[in-house]
Picture 1 (cartoon, rainbow, N blue to C red):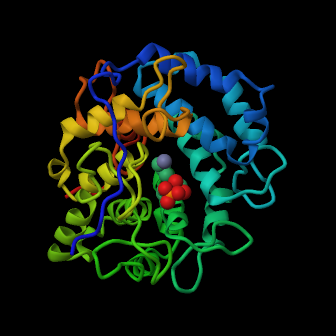
Picture 2: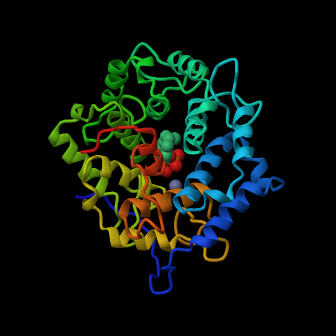
Length: 339
Ligand code: FPP
Ligand code: ZN
């Protein structure tokens, strides 16, 4: 017996079919400026990633000129924790690898690598690596393959991979590989498309995708393309979950790394992403009819970028591993492995 699918019903005869670029740009810039709202006040614990989502999405939509670069660079400096060497999501918060990666991504994207104190950043990341090769996310000791990805992505962006023990870090990632070909957050944890992206992204950055053998790669690509739901055409992150626009990134980027993007029905998925746009406020929601947010707006746009349903004058090409505009990765001369 197969695994039952849960899905949503979308009326594609009335759903939004055009890409609402102007509205998305207004939604994103407005989000960054509405400092007095409740929403802004309760999201400071992830602000740095929020800025990364805004900047990346605006850049992909050819609208990076709409942000105040100096304000953002100043803000990032205020979030730099001089004691640890990492970055916090907001001033006076604790540093964490998640927000350190977002800060580094923004500075690289804005061509301000000169603002990064490489030495203290490298020592911050190095001291988070454990005996088994895994990484703590911060001083409190949570381990997750997301943090392995963040550590390696930061180091790759500043050309300092040699700082940590790559072989052990790779062994830890491989210890999170499951019988179904997927990866989880720690050894034995269930396969999840977000963690699969992190683990494949990690292996791509350290050029060790050969650690996943051919039959496992095929099984994994099959698991990933089974995330596409029959009725809506959207992707979920695990069996029996509802479709969600952000999985247009986690799943598609993983398939792109494996060289199997064509295993997805691109027409059905792009219809689902376009239907999740809010035609009043701009922005994309997790699924059609829900409230939009910058996270799902970015991953809707990056999903469409990977699917190449629009030309590059509409949506710039995104890098499938670092989730940054491809021109930035080329400018920095960063190389990675894609199958
Ligand atoms: C789903 O999360 C996504 C993940 C587990 C992957 C997150 C990856 C990072 C933070 C690494 C950096 C990412 C980029 C793009 C550079 P969820 O909590 O929404 O999962 P759920 O759908 O199961 O609730
Ligand atoms: Zn989501």
